[in-house]
Image (cartoon, rainbow, N blue to C red):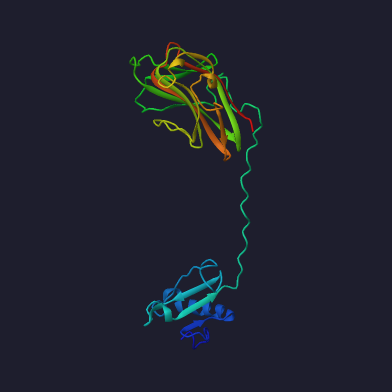
Length: 277
């Protein structure tokens, strides 16, 4: 047997045998030779064991323990083979946290904020793809939400326009110029979030930045021209101001929808987002 060949040294603990450190190498070589690439299969039973953490075994982080549950009195008196590694693991370096992006205070972080072209901006349908009642045009330095030529009068549509930004932790202020006349059963809102908007899904992001207009809640501003934070529809103490707690890539989106974009469409321009603290 393995014990008779002196590969295992009897222990003073009842029902247990364990290897010495010197015997580990001989034991491994002996078992490999007996296995003989499969020719010795059936003569021995082989186990693959994984070590536990320091709290798993009283013998330490590098202890391996095999037990048989087939002993007459169960695991309490089952024989054990213990193996303790003599190789110390290499300490892995702690991963360094990703540096926060450098975001200057007081500078506009939105590229192409004047809509000189469509560069840097993406359009996303907030309704199903089959809803083609509305579109967004980039012309004359503005982005304009309008009904399509084929739109059925009074039919609902919902579109969004967004850009991505690298933000650090801090407090930010949003604003933009907005111009619309006699919108009907319509709304306009700004959101920001870590996940990118998806076509066919209304985007709520991680938080609402600004409620620009809503003809049910703010019926007095069906017509407006000026800063989006000054429509009076958003009742927060500082409309358009919000806090970012985790740095990373964020998506800033303005969405507008409803029965009618009004006489001139919903026009936006000069989008700004500044870090204030």
